[in-house]
Amino acid sequence: MKKQIIWLEDILKIFNFFLILFFLFFSSNKLYAAERWVLDKNLSTIEFELPVLLANNVKGKFNNIEGYVELDVEKKINNKAIFSVQINDLDMNYIKYKDLLLSNIFFDVFQFPKAVVDTKKFSYDNEKEILLNVELTLKGKNETVPLTIYVTRLAEELVQIQSELIFSRTKFNIGINKWQNTKILKDKVKLKTNFFLFRE
Image (cartoon, rainbow, N blue to C red):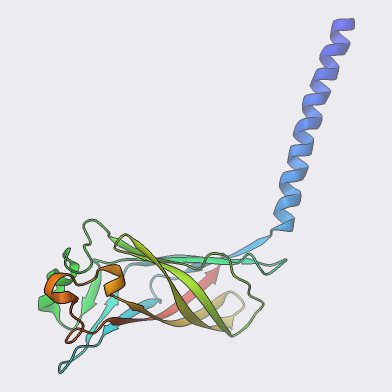
């Protein structure tokens, strides 16, 4: 009988332990409630432009984009967003130079197939314009770059995010050897995004 009582007490302790864990789990979820918005890949675009001296600028568009935004609906300070592009899936005006652009001289897509923008944590409270310092990962390097974002709520479950990001190609070793020179092929690359996100 004594053994049965001890056994029952042990079961109750284990049950209470799991009950506390269950409570903590759901309490923490409520404290950090997140709203997730996912990129519509069919509608969204990322375009790039690189100025060239005495010639048409190099222009193009990445086709394979992924990403999401998570909003901290309670405290509004733990928001985050991550977007990536598959670099080899692009259209450009200088099509004969596409292989060169994808080679190790420029993007080196075989070793570094993706470019990633990570906002880290940021605060947001329904502003229409946000200025952030984001982390750009490209060709195996990370750099913090400024990014201005414009938010338009199109419907209850749909938002449009437009932005313009300018970065130095030489900081990422995009264009090495003779292509490192910035007299003809300029240093600043401009990325323009037009994203559409649906709430999950």
